Amino acid sequence: MHPHGNTKAMKKEKADLKALKKIAVYCKRYLFAIIVALIFAVGGSVATIIGPEKIGELMNLLTEGIIVGVDMSAFVEICIMLIIIYATGAVLSYGQQFIMATVTQKTGKRLRRDIDCKINKIPLNYFDTTTKGDMLSVVTNDVDVIGQTLASSTANLISALALFIGVVYKMFATNWILALITIGASLLGFAAMAVVLSKSQKYFNRKQIDLGEMNGRIEEVYTNHNVVSVFGAKKYEKDRFESINKKLYEDNWKSQILSGMMMHIMTFVGNLSYVLIFVVGVAFIVSGNDAVTLGTIMSFVLYSKLFSQPLATLAQSMTYFQQASAASKRVFGLLEQEELSDESGKTARLETVRGDVSFKDIRFGYLPDKEIIHGFSAELKSGQKVAIVGPTGAGKTTIVNLLMRFYELDSGDITVDGVSVRDMKREDVHALFDMILQDTWLFDGTVRENLVYNKEGVTDARLDEACAAVGLKHFVETLPNGYDTLLDDKLNLSEGQKQQLTIARAMIKDSPLLILDEATSSVDTRTELVIQKAMDELTNGRTSFVIAHRLSTIKNADVILVLDKGDIVETGDHETLLKKGGYYAELYNAQFAAA
Image (cartoon, rainbow, N blue to C red; front, side):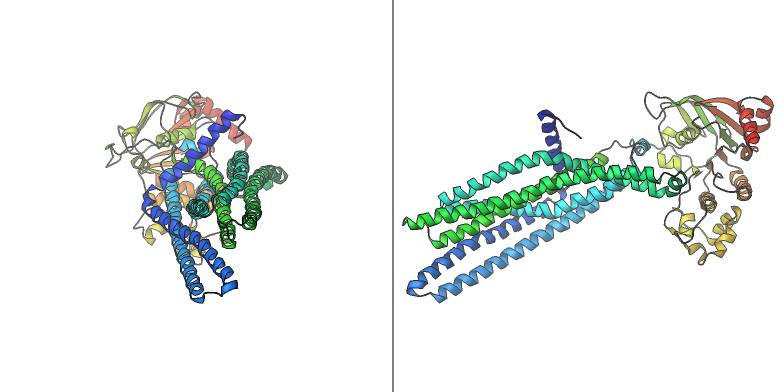
């Protein structure tokens, strides 16, 4: 991010060009439309180039008319021709912009769709190291920057290049000496622009990174505003925000100041060329050179303006392309992330599920050199309620994540009814489980939409049954529109009610295996008793895994697995483990002693 030395700068420049090339390859399917836009751009530029020549003829006609009288028929003919030329140029230019705007919006739509699709194919460990705010910044800010560049800069650049080539040709065809003077002055602008470009790119890259970091901080702090307030961390978070905001300001300011210089440099070069054209042109006329007339000077002033116009457009386009380069690195960096392995060839599937689960010497670490599950083995029978307990960091949630194939094992195997989860498609493994997490997740929508999430054909009678089981039926009846009430900030649900909704959602899904990860941690004791009763009904006849810190909630578990540092240290039911007086007894007695 902070290159030093020519070698690194050169590598960075190559990377920038590579990022822009990826955008071009991505737009390949719109090649025909872009070619049509290019033709329109060339046509519009040709119309613009012909105009000054006709204006020069008009000026010569008026100059000659001062002495012998103006030929009005020729005058009207040239004026009509100018109107037709400029009208044609306007239509072609609009057509080009219309096509490029369409291509831009389709490209942006496709990018967002591909990112959404990609997110579902990326391993979970990517999200462990990426903030949600940074992901949102890629989908919104970075995709928008690419779209804006395609919409404005690409279209303008095509026109500018066509105009540049045409103007150079017409200038040399008109007077090569004045052409060299105009181009020579412009070389100063090119040299200055090259220096500015070499300095400003790193600030555009930093700006996009700063935006992602800021969005991440805002999303985290605003989402957890209550925690920030409770811990009195408002000043701390404000200082962190100010630090990021200052970095964003500095990098944005430097990038804009440096890139903004290019437009002014090219404007100065254009004005300088006007002065030189008049000085040299008048010198030709005074010396009696018939190759230069007032019409020639007028044409060249217009050509000079047209010549500086594509250069100024080019300078501005470079600014946008720098931003697009930085944005495309982040967008394609996400799109090129390693995906989960292809499982289209896997055919293993459980048509009927008993619920026998076997862990066979499984080993796993989130990082290659840091193993946290060391040879975990367990044989669990159909219909058993299995509790997994242990101190924080013992590996309880990790075991469940491995069971559902959210992560892949380093070694060992997990089977359901004798079939390895590795031999089944991930979506088929996920379909085996209901999962109720410690953190509740509700989305914007009605109560009904949250309860029947991704499940069709659910009747109101089934909704009533599930809500009654978790103690929510009375709450739903008090809502203004019942199950069709919109869940928003005005409803002001408690954490317990949110958890009850997620539990009811799992009951409606009705999968053969169940995972409860601290499912009652957010509810009061009275509600916990209601939910515990519902859980007993829910777990009846199905294999269930309960992760709990409140050991009082798992007294009726068939099997309790006690974990410590990734290993099973004890196994048995509640009474057996208490009588044993080991690690589980210490945990259990410590909780009641603390109470």
